Length: 433
Image 1 (cartoon, rainbow, N blue to C red):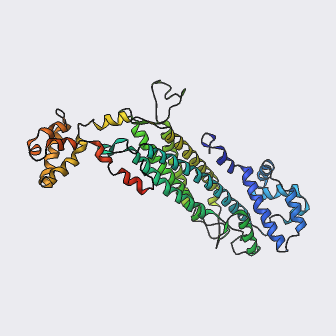
Image 2 (image 1 turned 90 degrees about the horizontal axis):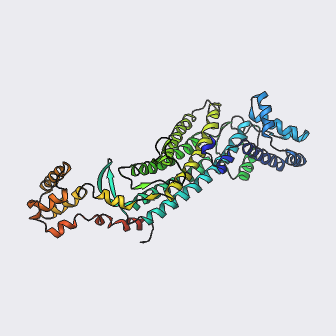
């Protein structure tokens, strides 16, 4: 992933140095296990542990000659270690090391993503509590529907992020497996006890069955989970983008002092952060598709998945880490304009209260069909201009003959639509504030 979207802690996980260090951890744990089983001399293990270091530059030089990164790695280590290196990589195949180490790195990446998702969820909760009773226009199909609580938007996103946290934790467990089972997965040249000890030392579970590789349904699940989380972030970003449109301008993403919105138009304050999130979500979905394509490998292994994963695993974890951080910043510092929300509530002259009037007419004894026809007739006329819907309602004898004026006027109160918000919040375990 390009540096623009890479945060240091996540980026470090995908450096060549960290990869080779993790490979070395696998190799050393395997040697310890072999020594405990009496196969590899203990003094050889101690010598290897003392002398083995990773040198990404030297590994790259050797790989340019041999065209095999694991052989380049083992050769570079052997150069440092000397004769005892004959025991290095004993009984293992390349993917025993690569797949097991990759699982370690994926778990580390998942931990960072979970922490980022938890932080975003907390910020969403704070905004939900802050705006519990802030009235905003609810919209369906992009058209004014009925008033609602602005805080409910954040509460909804908070709940979705809780589900995403569950997904991320499940995905972490799905990839928290290793394998030290040899070239076709049948332990022909390695004792299963070596696998158990290596995995235990790395915090992994041994795969119950493997071939030369861990099965890629695990990685597909991990990657599709990242795409689903990214979809939630895009969903939030799209809502902010809509609410920031000039004609609406009920919210606005942070715009810092010195920031510029356009090279041509000095007045511009664009939702560029949220647009960035929308764009990067597409990358996650595309990479998830590539991970799904990786499931079908030939026989006990082919290498078609490897080149794909060198791109999609670092890119997707780095991108989602960046998106979580960026959206957390946007939500925490979001500019909110309640006066614009109030103005938009009144923009249609009361049309948004049509359902409440409909129900009141039904309660007065009018059939639903007749009540719907009366309310729709007045609403359609109001859409054309002239008198507002509220004015037409208050002067129509078919309505005023049934419902007293004070009651009619009370039907146009937006606060009515927030009367059950506290009950929703109680479902979330949030005390009334």
